[in-house]
Image 1 (cartoon, rainbow, N blue to C red):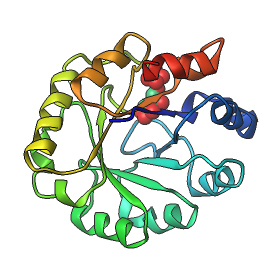
Image 2 (image 1 turned 180 degrees about the horizontal axis):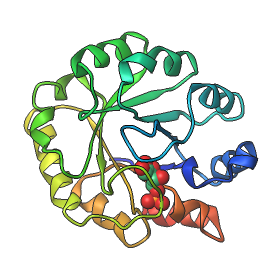
Image 3 (image 1 turned 135 degrees about the horizontal axis):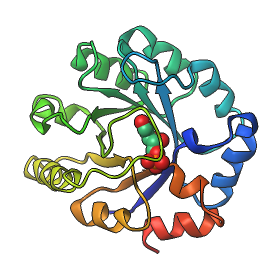
Length: 216
Ligand SMILES: O=C(CO)[C@@H](O)[C@H](O)COP(=O)(O)O
């Protein structure tokens, strides 16, 4: 499977966001990962739908919007309108997951479900055939620059098996602590979309960092 790299703009300079987005676009990024945090679901506040709408005007990269918000149903339409190409909601959020997936997909947007490190894969059992992507959090969500949680590797392997046993086509995205050391491990375990914030924006040569993460 092709490996895709999704730089997280959480590590970009918010005062120069368009420039920082164009940097990763020119450097070979496949997607742009947009972290939306509400200060309830996670202990941090980041950006909302108006910023996603503004970003959409300055890049051709597909927008991979990760909703770390307590009540995703309330805001889903605004992120669809803002131009999100993938919308990921958390299994732990206060919502009817199946209804949200239907709402996302009926708008022609790809649907993802994210799991926190402590959440079991069993919550995916009933919805796996309906979604396009699972986002495995390999840190506790809320902040960039944290260390990769090693048990995520086994979780990715088990998820890959679940997908293959059911003959499904579901992307496995991994987010948190991805760098040149952890990237080959998560790829080997079965992930095909790698989110990276600090390892991309903190690198002296962004093109090289993206190539290294991809393993090419
Ligand atoms: O969603 C999050 C954190 O909640 C991530 O997208 C981070 O932004 C990844 O940052 P690094 O661990 O790659 O620095």
